[in-house]
Amino acid sequence: MITLRFGVADLAKTRFVISPLDHLMAGTARLGVHQCVGLRSERWWREVRRHVPHRAGRFLDLVNASAIGVPSFMAADLDAVRRQLTDELDAILAVPQQTVDEDLAMFGSETELPAVLARLRDDGTRGMREVSDGAWALFRSCLAADWPEIRRALEADIAARARTAARSGIGAVLGSLHPNAVWRDEGVLECTIADLEGTFDLDGRGLELRPNYFLQHGIGLLAGQDRQSLLLHPVGSPAVESPSRPPAADGLAAVLGPARARVLRAIAGSPCSTTELAHQLGVTPPSASAHATALRGAGLIVTRREGKQVRHTLTEVGHDLLLDNPAPPAPAA
Image 1 (cartoon, helix red, strand yellow):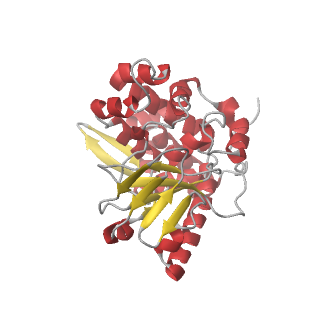
Image 2 (image 1 turned 90 degrees about the horizontal axis):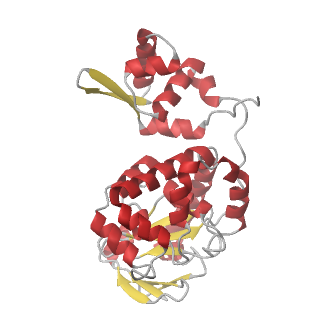
Image 3 (image 1 turned 180 degrees about the vertical axis):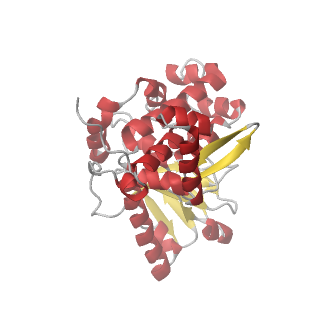
């Protein structure tokens, strides 16, 4: 049993966090390796695995390398509550190599370390970049279409737990996360995770509570000494069902118009200059500039000068709009 000790400051700083990266890992975690995932994950994986890009292989190997779990550096340490996958991947790439090596050493000695993890350690920055690129490609190919509906289920779960906190206090919330997490009135949370043992003081940093759509048969825990600890738990709403595929209609085009929907999706694919945007879309630079100006005025993109050029990137509002309005599937050939 793992015991987490809360002080007054810890209770004040306990918060809910929605993580796309957590879901990418839990959705692709295989039941034969990780026992906390369940049929929901298996059903989703059967539906999307034919779309898995080749470059995602290294990420998938890392997620399923050991029944112990995934390395701690894969749990991005960020301040934001409603996170973007790109920010989480940037945080992983910024992890010092020494920290990566120390986290990987927890999975066994030199001779016991799974081959996948040993290669990641030896490849250094290049290996981490391949993991990050694979995660992004996997998200876009397999999870992006379902993410808006999954996120709505997560936000509904958080809202329900917030109402519990308003009625009965944060202790009632902590005690209702899962049967394997038991809250004691003396200010401790007792977490049963396999045969792990230990006691951790949260030291005034609080606890991140991360609801997970794919987690069904247990909880996950990272008790950090130099960061906020986090606890993954299943969503509690019995009404949550498997996400449905988006309709064929293009909601983004209905709001912005087809041309500006194409522009926004092009900028989402890769930040670009006005000239690059025009070339990619097959329009004149003045036309591309006019569309970018309209999108910038709506708060969907930002434009920054880089030398003699400007570069367009999505804002968080633009990113969320795209997540809620995925491109319709291409017509069959």
